[in-house]
Image (cartoon, rainbow, N blue to C red; front, top):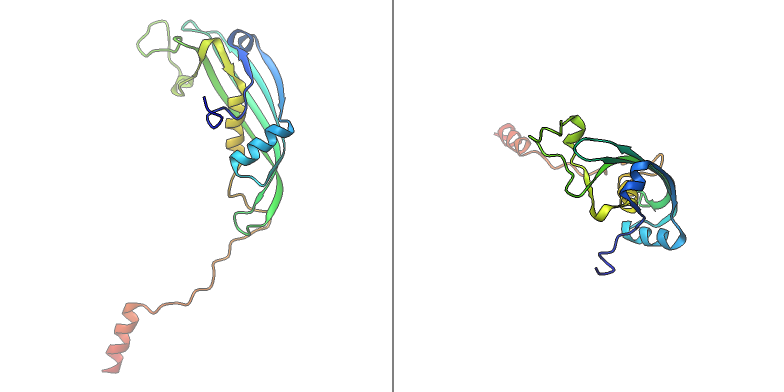
Amino acid sequence: MTEQDAPLWTHTVRFDEAFRGLNLTLTADEARLKTLTESFGMIELHALEAKVKTTGLPSPGGDRVRIDVALTGEVTQECGVTLEPFRHAIHADIDVINVLKNKTAKAGDPDNELTLDDLDVPDVAENGVIDIGLYVIEALGEAYDPFARKPGAVFEEPDLPKEPSPFAALAKLKRDE
């Protein structure tokens, strides 16, 4: 794996630990803030914290783990309207379901009754490990709007000279006759 392919944040937990339930607080250090700033094209990411809660969901077709991520942070970025830098808070809440490899529910399997929750295919925990860091990055992607507007910024249409309508030119020719 090259440095370019390396995950932006890695924090692994074992599936069985996550199933029993975890409450984690992950805070980005200065080096990670700098890496994320560059990767997302921000002016500066000042702070980033993720509160992560895992919950085990027993199922006859294979246990599942629900992961809830509540992300907060503070960023300086360019206003999408004025192009001036401004600092503001970001936040996002995401939840995902994880299953062990080879334990995904299959339609038609009598041991697995599918519900509305099954419409979203669960992520697969490879080798019994879940990388919580990937979900923190996913939440950051949800929270960060690259075209955010500075409070009070309003886009105003520029005054462009109006071109005469082709029909106006025809009407003028008719009047001249």
